[in-house]
Image 1: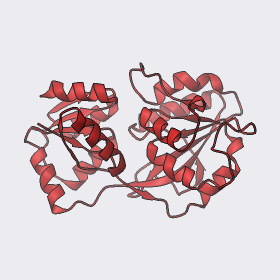
Image 2: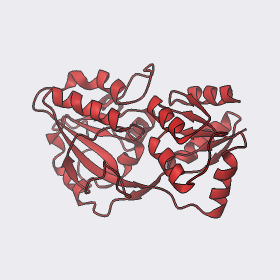
Image 3: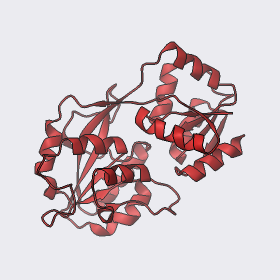
Image 4: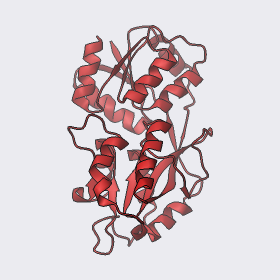
Length: 280
């Protein structure tokens, strides 16, 4: 049995290392490609307005790197300054780890409890709702889809109701937007990177075709990754394929795509390993 890790390249390598260390056969086959935005000026401008927001939510580790790469050299590290009380919100441990690596104090980061059923907006909301009051503003640092789906918007700080971590569907984003609006909180977005389907070489296509029916286990942490897979291999049957998905909405996307076996798992290493082993 082989595990197919579908996360973007940077995260995929870490998962390959961690799963290999657990004795699993693993190969990276990224289904989302991450690229820089064409105009970084809005990122730099956001630092000038940092104190305007009660919280900055980072939808993924990919959102952290470009945001902090745009920080003016003499600015404080986002949070912890006596003049800036902005909180940092994340939905999972990978994004929290990315913030710690750029110097954000752990005490200034809000994340769902390690015992939470899922690492998503609903779980995060239970942690942060008490921080907010009417008139507050929240900035969402996120990615944008190059190919242009319903959530794509021009780069920069924009308004809207399309919110959430990368693994979430529109339903999850809308849910969080409604919660913020119910408290009279204004939400704005900052596009920090671009997402697009990867361009596969012949070897990657052959690997995917073989993994559709050879007993491999596909590890999905994004509904968009599944959509990209279907786009890359149109007409391919996934009835003999097996998948582990790290959120119920991702699991639903895998079933809709035609995967014959789909198992749900919390997005932590021990839970994912247990789910993969249960498939065998």
